[in-house]
Amino acid sequence: MNELQKLTTELLVIVKEANEIYHEKRKTNEKGDFYEEVKPFADRAKDVSTRWKKEIDEQLQQRGFKYIHRPQVKALVENIELVSVQAFFPDTSYTRFKNYIESTSFLLNSLLNELK
Image (cartoon, rainbow, N blue to C red):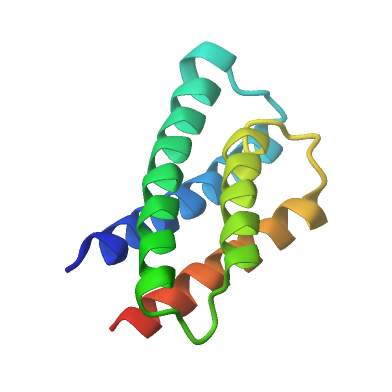
């Protein structure tokens, strides 16, 4: 598996975890502890998304993709940064959070399919 596939898969895992955290926090109605939960998770998401962006930017220059373009890459990185923090706050808009999760997952899965 090449590096871009590996990082894309890691991002999908992070998005799935964020979704699970969000639903758990909504159920318990408790905010995540910033230093114990939010920051480590957000830092991990930022690290992977930064490495992923570097990889995909190189791939876009070399070959391009059918369904993935630069504006989508930028939006995807921003979405991951948003959901990695918002997941810990139960008062985050359910609809907006769900839309971020679904669009991010869709793009990442589309990219994985194209890489195969």
